[in-house]
Length: 283
Image (cartoon, rainbow, N blue to C red; front, side, top):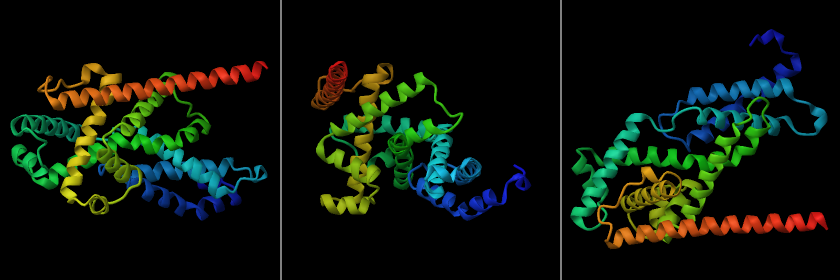
């Protein structure tokens, strides 16, 4: 960009609102895995700010800070979607930890603690918790990003591929339904930690348990959510239960059935609404 090509008004808008980019980037960094590069998000945000300043039309009655914030958030969401939210090494270690948890659950007859998983995997508890954090944030980040989906559609030249957009929305729908069908305590942990962004210490105090227990509940919830999405959308990726006739396997199957039933009910409700709208229009 050649700075001298900007009008004085455009330059003033850019300079006066540069701090807005920093604010939105800082807000976003609290929601994403630790390996996401802050500078990449800042660059995307600054470019969006420049584009917003060039395209801004005061006659439309929309304040520039609101217009620019919309463009900046949309650009940052696009940047996040263009990268792998969890690196290959993080995902590989996550698969190894999942296998360790499954093996320990079979041996112990109960979910393993973080300390037991760490000991079996030859890692520190901090490393196990850190890996869980990165994977969990990567999996749930799309829930936050979905709030800005309509923003992305308004940006010039950023129209998503229809098929990918449909698949993305379907996955988000299933994820939302899967969260709603989690056992109450697991659902509360997911909603409070990821959606309300409360620290684990606060959630632990609310439930009257330790932070370690909250971390364990969060890990259990993420495994259930992943398996529920795979069950409905990618059956080949679903890991068979180690004891298919056991109580744990039956509870998991019941959970899958509840998610499927909620999804079917939602589709039925949409069909009824569409039919009612059609009747109203024809009348």
